[in-house]
Length: 313
Image 1 (cartoon, helix red, strand yellow):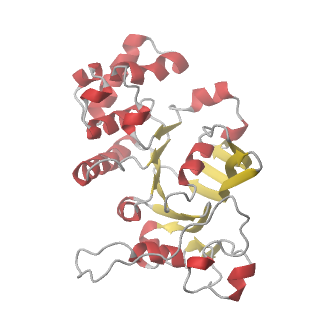
Image 2 (cartoon, helix red, strand yellow; image 1 turned 180 degrees about the vertical axis):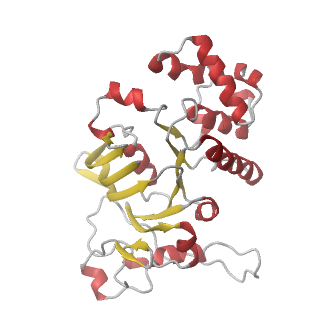
């Protein structure tokens, strides 16, 4: 239903190009919960913006396709994309406070896209806004509020309600609970699960918190240095991780059932994505690295029920 094919994207700064997304491909089926995890700076948000046609200068898409029901979104004009956005594909941004205009009432922000791009009258738009706010557990009278009059959790729910306005098929969620405390995080994640079952949409959920995805996602992709290094069913990736980076991320999760003698972490630091990468991008941080890793880049291969890019397999 939604497919990204060999997508390459990045940022051009004078003579320096930061290659943030490298040959990434994945599919999202109907009512899928597809998770993308990786540490900060690995290219997750760039992947999302490029997939939605929202990558602004100096960012640019070099090559690849983004297919929604067979239509390549990257080949469409801006006017055609406006008709598809919110209706078939939408976005929940990383920080709700930054994505809401502080001098506009909630009702006007939510109704704006309906009136300007989809031909709604203001009254009809406000009625739909009320309906979607109820769906996320916000009283309709709060549509008269300004963003600063709402708590962080309520603002995040408003952004989720905005993404649901026209019942899209796919919703991208870019770390939607990052700035919230753990109790509110849990409440919003439960609501996202309930909404998905009720409204029958698919989710592409982007986060650096891998533990969230193992609990929620049906499929998970582990991203490192702009590439997917492991991709498969979430339960399988969690129970039998194959890539050394995936193993490192899982081992770094603190256990609530065992005594914590010391924190485990992955040594070293992420690569500079402006550099040309030769061999395996993870080799300098990998305890399993050998000679082949220095000279040959591993390709994704189907191993034991999932895709993995590692010379060990």
